[in-house]
Amino acid sequence: MNVHAAHGRNAAGGKEQRIARQEGRNHQAGFAEYNQKQDDVNPNAVLQGQFGQMAVDVEDEVDNGLKHVVFSLSAAKRARIVTERRRK
Image (cartoon, rainbow, N blue to C red; front, side, top):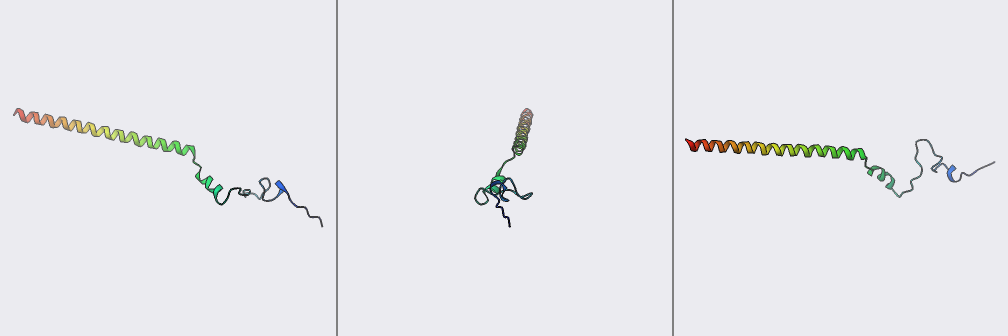
């Protein structure tokens, strides 16, 4: 009977030869490798978040500007009414 031991990269658990759709051995303790993959941030998501925040900031500035315009118009209208009452 001829028996050959698999060594190094020919071993089933090595990185080179493995069952299809199965990753090689985990070289990090516990779930560290899994957590690292989960913690990765997609740069496109960061850019989208920044553009979304920029849109909110612009909307807030427009809203604040409109409030100032309305307040100024209201103040001008009140001043005109007071002036008209004083003339009577």
